[in-house]
Image 1 (cartoon, rainbow over the protein chains, first blue to last red):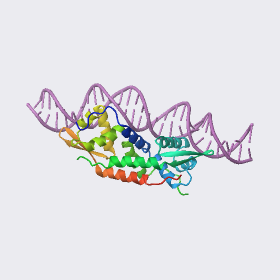
Image 2: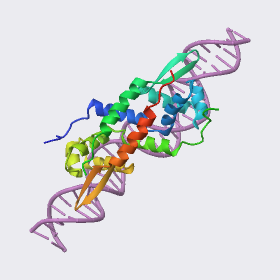
Image 3: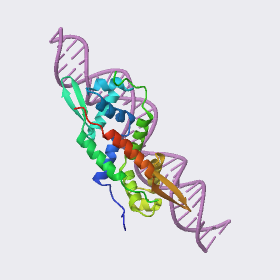
Image 4: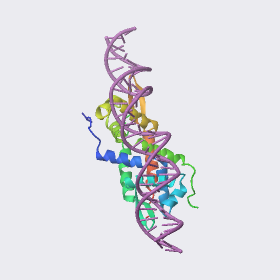
Length: 105
Length: 105
DNA sequence: ATCGTTCATCGTAAATATACGATTAAGCTT
DNA sequence: AAGCTTAATCGTATATTTACGATGAACGAT
């Protein structure tokens, strides 16, 4: 058989799905864009630009941080968030690999 | 202000998040891989290879179809699923665009 | 030491996602 | 038509996600 029945998914599949999940909300897409456009990365600035409460934005940041797409750096009472380019590139590569295939029909 | 507060997310952001949501489960990642590896695209063959019930696989296929990443073609009593390369390329481009940015820290 | 600022976390409500067995629908085959 | 195969849908249970206000913790400034 070319593709036998699997018992569980691979780490790669699970990881890629997890990264996709982190990108699966428009607020988190927007946050990534904001982190690229702004000089400052503090949470308050992000909250000011989104139609969401501070607690909700914090939750979205946590989700992005969970998969490593962003890093948070403590700066006094503030937290400076920034994109983790290494992880972003890794995600890009994995998605490119998945998307480079050609359909069967 | 460089990035004013938004009232709602753009269509692009919502769409990209939606595509990411479709990719946010390892079973759906695996299904895309299977559709590339197999000559046959029928649902039964996919079900045979996954550790999930037929009803669940059907739900995952529906989610992939919802965002247009796959198409289903009726072939008698069977359905032949295949990857929609045009949509896959569109998704790839949008993600590339998002990922091409450079972090602020 | 107290106060204001900043952000995470808690508690919670509502919505959505995931999974399965059972059923239905549609199409072959006989 | 009756029966078989294929796959979607229904009904349902459980888990997760999303959102918010309220609270708490950490830090700087007064």
